[in-house]
Image (cartoon, rainbow, N blue to C red; front, side, top):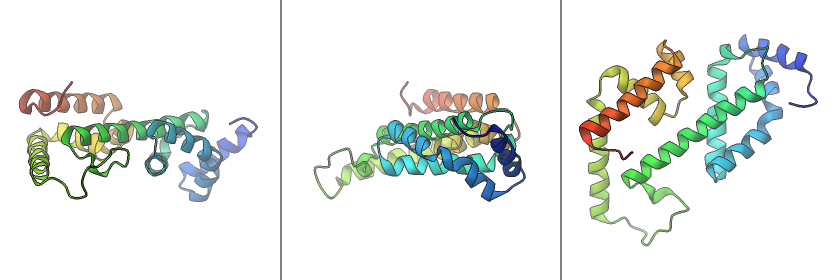
Length: 188
């Protein structure tokens, strides 16, 4: 961040890596307005943007050991925030695919009560997706669930599962491919 002493950031990063929550607050506070603006531009709604930013900050805290005192924290925070926004956008896409748009304030509703047939179809689609995911090998399922459903970054999942980010990316890709091929659930 311009005008900010790099030595101060380096000291704060070291304190954060040791688990100092107050230092974490001091480190991220100057970046919050910019990150929130980015999230709003990506997601379009204030609530989603705030949730994505909170998830990004939580992920940064959980993975604080990865903070590099020699690198600018702004770039790292931006990347994590973008990843959380992308995750939310992917979940929106899946929700639209499954017909769960009723909660989206940007989509006009024609009736207050959902159509019974549509509700049954939605439940059936959700059950089919759940069964399909349950049928995946454990390694693929855990990567898919953690990344695509829980919204965690691939880096965070790699740390949780003790593997590389590339391995997680490959597992998620393979899980989605199997779901497409075997269960014909997702389009392109």
